[in-house]
Image: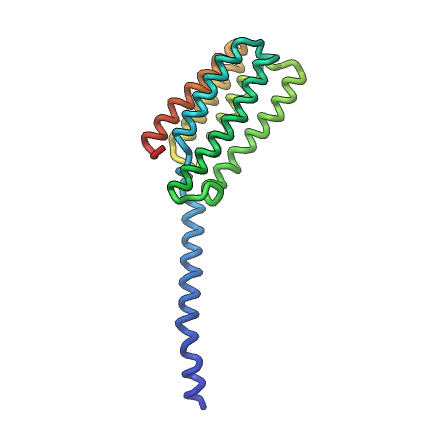
Length: 203
């Protein structure tokens, strides 16, 4: 009777070992994803955002910034966000990564607070007639978001964020240069850094 029980129990051992191995592999995979680097930032998408910003700057310069110019830049920001997000998702799929898991999720969670703060300050400053401060505010907060989100990406990303922050501080110090500095930042910096990202990190 004891021999028969032992024979019946024997097949369960390999199954238990297999389950444990699968659990260990899953744990290792989750750990690697959590500590990895988000490499799906799209250089080509960043360059497209730069081109859109330069087009917006050229068109907005025909109008007073406090009126139609503000709406042109706000519309360009929305379109650029869609283009940049699509490019990131597309690159992530090509690299067989997920744009919203592991480092990708950390990137977005650290980037979004600055965007939300920028939107709230835009409404407040526009309502208070302080639109001259908006270019510096946008550049500074966008750069802050890129720096914090870029902590989970390749090094060139937070470097780009620091450049945006420097332009934002300059725009706040010299409000009359606001639209020009936005063209330099959202247009020129996106094109320059986007080209570097595309060249070094594959698109």
